Each structure stands twice: as C-alpha cells, then as structure tokens.
Image (spheres, rainbow, N blue to C red):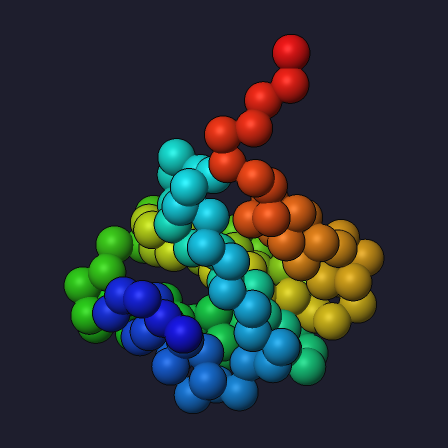
Length: 117
C-alpha cells in the first residue's frame, strides 16, 4: 500500500498502537504542502493521545521532522504534520461529524487538467 519508506513506517507505528479504520489519501498531485494524508481513529481520547505520542516519539527516533501538532490536549481530533505525511487521529464520532474522509475522497477523485471557463 505504501509507496515510500516514511509512509510505511508511519502506518506500522499506527498499527502498533491499534489505530482503527486507517485510510491513506494520496494528495500529492492536488496539494503543495504534503503528499499523503492519513486518517485513523482511536477508541477514546486517551487512546488517541497514546497513538499520537507514539507517532511523535517514533518520528523523533527516526529523525523525521515534525512540522506541527495540534489537538493533543483534548484527544478528540489530533493532527500530526510530518512534512510529506499528515496524520489525523479522530474519535469515531468526530470523524463522522466532520466527514473528513468524504473531503479527501472528493479531493483525490478530482480529474486532473479539467477546467471550466
């Protein structure tokens, strides 16, 4: 599934902490700031925090630059920006409420080169 080593490592780290419903969106052609967006969920805010902290620890250990992080204090929606891979960690009800998968599915389904005047 993963086309590069960083993405593969991140997916493995998410699996180590039992992240659920992991989806990968290849947005490299539509985005100037990242290549992949990973969306996953944990079972509770503490689980999400554990997933995020493991991701941050492993990124540091492997010398992946963490550009930013947000939402760790509450754990309902955590974002970890590791440059060409951005990870969103949700509670299931927040993921459904924001319909983030629909947003990224629509983004990646856009035909390339089509413009309307």
